[in-house]
Length: 146
Image (cartoon, rainbow, N blue to C red; front, side, top):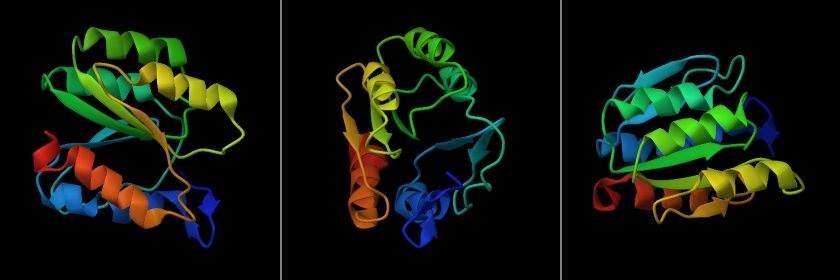
């Protein structure tokens, strides 16, 4: 998420896009090399290290969520561990938003496999469609989407 999408870093575009959902009370978990709950009003931590999606999914397991929205470039450290962690969540709706390169078929396929429980996979061009990303996140993660 440290790379640029147009004139801005992807992490900054995502931070702006999730702000309304955070204000509305969505539980946001940031993940890189570590997992961090994002308190209401907080900004995403700077991108650093790896993509420990499996740790983030294990972390939210204790909260027994009914639905999750995962935003990723589709390149977790351990795809198999991430899919096992998603399976352990039981029947949870997982919607995924892919924000990596359009040509990365492997990453796109991973994100499609991660979506489950009636959840959908979508892709967003963060440079050209930041408002569409924000609208999708608000719809999926806001109070009406829970």
